[in-house]
Image (tube, rainbow, N blue to C red; front, side):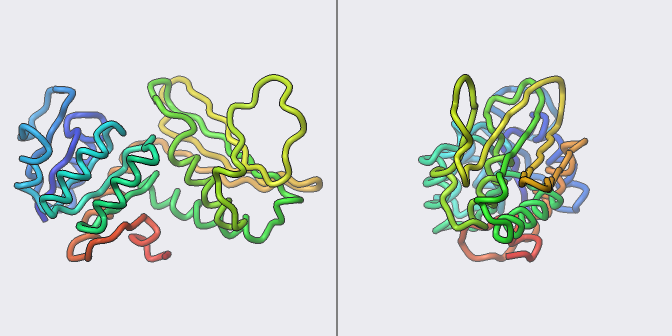
Length: 252
């Protein structure tokens, strides 16, 4: 499989490149709008990269999502997308592209996080919302620009799915001041930023007589890169469609 990487000379791009080579795939090169130095072959733009690849991987910036979706769909090139902070319009562009090409889009490519999300949905379905308050706490490095994190939102969506509700209707974010009593059935978010934390997420189900916590801590971004390459290799030969890590791990 010929693989290209958008943002190849960035922090995640370099790890992706190493994992692609380790997996025995053909690393064609990439694009890097930031102009970071590196040894990889650089293409002038995403369209030129797509012409040389079977699949493009990226953990870049949300502002690139719509343009990349259009370019890769036009070229018929598979896509592994791990960029966080996508807007509703960005996600609509990803869905539109998936009608023409196979896409794996995930908030987090760690197999461990995927299993936590699966457990979160099951717990939410079993624990009544009127008795168990759901709260999500996440912490990341000080450079992270979006909050709550994509993984935290994915946790919230897993809980909402388990409860049969829409996350947007019950999410509570950024409490401050006199907010009143907590609404029954709400899913709360708290985002912490500091230092160089790779990623920590805890989902709490808090009842009157017990608390249940699901926690995932990432100590190395390589877990995300390895999971993304696993997804890329899994995509080979797949028909157009929008897939997630649950599909890759055989949980769907």
